[in-house]
Image (cartoon, rainbow, N blue to C red; front, side):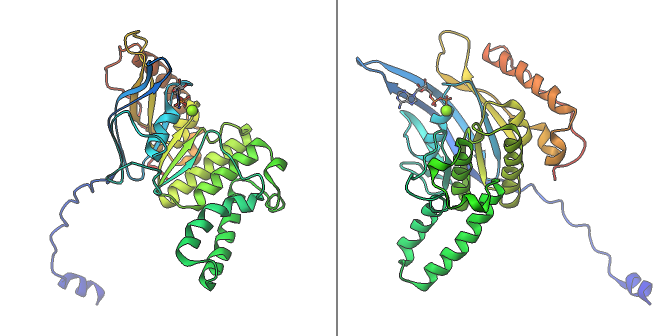
Length: 313
Ligand SMILES: Nc1ncnc2c1ncn2[C@@H]1O[C@H](COP(=O)(O)OP(=O)(O)O)[C@@H](O)[C@H]1O
Ligand SMILES: [Mg+2]
């Protein structure tokens, strides 16, 4: 009976091959330069000729030596600083002031000393919402209750315990304060997340736990992330793409530029398998050599990495 019904079914043409969906550009920098005045009419060019396009949902890790302009790059995208030349756009609009699409975990995080850990995390979203609704409205208090539950969840994911939530910043270690700053940014659910050496004050085991958590947040809701680190291994574990910012060794070009911009081959593996992958150390060493060659201005060859076998999680 069933087979007769199947036999009677009209033959359908195979579906047309789907064209790849173009990804929306989230961040675009065009010919960006930044120069700072350094007294007596002189100026110091930190970045110049930066062209960078980042699609929505990419996890881009920025590597580079201290002083090469990584934090400056993040502040330009945030809108905390304007470029001396060129243009910066987020979601197709020129950035002229701090952009609410961007969440920011600064290198030097600062918490309100007179607010508890929970009070600090709640401050941003509560104020954003109370402006619209007014605190006297019942809907605000409902929102606040839900927000506190979500804040507890994020703080827990950052490894903070319920008994820490009523503590004040002076009672917390640097690493704990850094984790509060991360939870604070996540709670705002920004479409773009800018993280400046966000894991630098953490001990190795907390750091690897947070790497897992930040990857999970990215995997669940796919914000666009720009993540600055000094750690190549961290870049390979987290990012879908990494860029190396730095100076050419050539004395005539002392400002920083993008020396290397490449897809992360390890991003094709499930996150849990990346740290154990035999590819990790080999690619790390290759990246080190390519970065050195790029800084010498001698590497123009396309980079060939062995392809890890399984798709991303
Ligand atoms: N507001 C400023 N005024 C003058 N110089 C600055 C300013 N901000 C950054 N710089 C200089 O620009 C360079 C890049 O700084 P930064 O972006 O903080 O580097 P990174 O984050 O890569 O360590 C450094 O030499 C720094 O001293
Ligand atoms: Mg910095």
